[in-house]
Image (cartoon, rainbow, N blue to C red):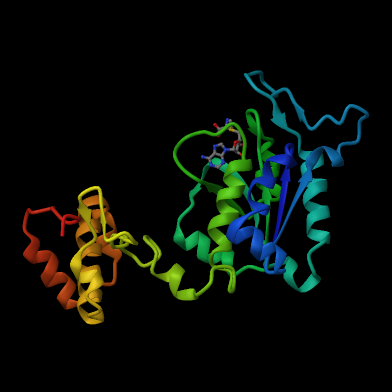
Length: 253
Ligand SMILES: C[S@@+](CC[C@H](N)C(=O)[O-])C[C@H]1O[C@@H](n2cnc3c(N)ncnc32)[C@H](O)[C@@H]1O
């Protein structure tokens, strides 16, 4: 999967490429991340990529000409057959909130072109003439789109086949599964007076699965009850939740 990020600060994109799962996926040829400096596409000798707002107001606005030229250049690097299926994403606090459905949609694409705004934002003609998806990573405002681009790349990459060890790992994660994940424990069995639950060390796989499912249901109900409406629940899940009544103590088991 090819991620092409257009930014005034390409150095900010280096954060993901050099280590752990994403770094390894790049080395293995499963992903590529290129960060292109929008200033490369300016035409004046000062490399002016931003300008004052028409009508007045604080902050500079990213100019349309270098961004259109940078997107044209990025699209030219995409094979003909993949161009139409390559989203052009604007990072923006005004966009749709990033969630699993957007991550799934992007992961099915051959690549993404991601535009990072900065300062006051981008000229509206960029939105109107270039962008296929406008995405926010949360209801707060960042100084620039670079961190948002990294979040999108990281979240999408986990769903590119081969990037995370086994497909099962990602499907069982919180949110992706529709619920929050059950508590996790590793050695030592006892730490500072806190014991890992006996059941997890029993070797009884059916009982372990049952315990995990129940923990997952309880935790979701307590921390993200909104998820339960859309979660795929069995009759046994519903009966278990109904039986919980008002008692929200879970992790103590
Ligand atoms: C300071 S913000 C501009 C906000 C703009 N004045 C507005 O009110 O919509 C600068 C840039 O940071 C990025 N950005 C800020 N908050 C973001 C968020 N929550 N999600 C994604 N990108 C964000 C966008 O690329 C944006 O153009």
